[in-house]
Structures are given as C-alpha cells and as structure tokens.
Amino acid sequence: MERNYVKRNVHLSLLGERLVQFFKEQRFRVRAVNEEKKGLFKIIVRSTHEHEITGKVTVLIQGCPNEFSVNFTAGALSQAFMKFGMLTSFLGGGSIFLRGIKSKDALERLERGFWVYVEEKIDFLVGSAGRMKRID
Image 1 (cartoon, helix red, strand yellow):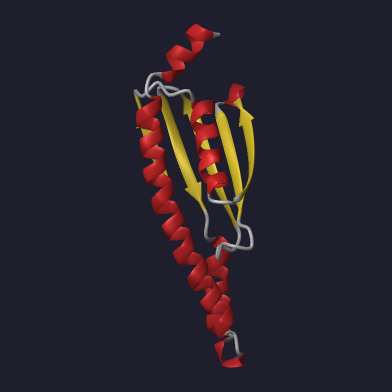
Image 2 (cartoon, rainbow, N blue to C red; image 1 turned 180 degrees about the horizontal axis):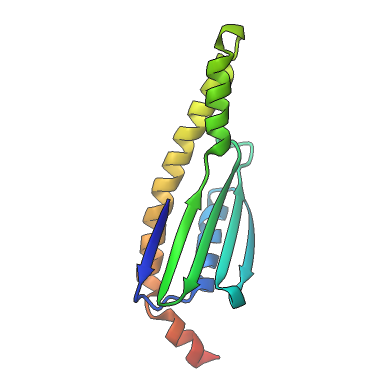
C-alpha cells in the first residue's frame, strides 16, 4: 500500500529513522539505506523466529519534504505458500497453506499498526525539514 503526503515539510531522514525504530522495537531485523540525493529512504525488514511472517517487508520513503510517499510492500511469499499449499493439499500440503494464512494475518496486523505509527510520526514531524536546515 502506498500513501502520498503533501505540504507537510517533513525531514524524510528523521521519518525513516523513526520507522526503523518502530520495527526494531517489535524485534525485527532491519536494514536501512538512505540516499538523500535521490530523495529515497529504503527499509528492508526481515522477521525473526518469534514472528509468523514469511518473507520480507520493504518500506520506501520517496520524494521531497513537501511532497513524498510512503510505500509498504509485503506478502508475496505468504501468497505463494497459500497457493502451493492449496495445490498440494491432497499430498499433505495443508500445513504450508496454514503457514501462508498465518503469515498473511500477521502481515495485516503489522501493516495496520505501521500506518497508525506513520500518521503519528508525520504529524509530529510536520515542519521539521525547515528546522533541520536552520540548525545545519
């Protein structure tokens, strides 16, 4: 899912750092790539043994402080498990299907919490790009 934001003047690196912290607090493995010159902040999230999520989650923050988008992408592996599990259910593939369903549910819960967190942080960081330039 992708959401666009206009006229917020948000320092995108600060937003990216806050989102990295969101995933770390939930005990995910996180890798962040900040390419400020291109207006891109990428976060790659992988689950640990305590999560039911299969595959990775990718978050992209793109644009400039006054016009940017946040994109949350995940679930390809969960869908694949569900399809493969259905096809092989007569051979005992039901457990694969169940794993795909659990992963999809966990991803949906994670994404709901993520968007609530994003909205809160953006509201908190409104105008931060102007303040950061004055400090530099």
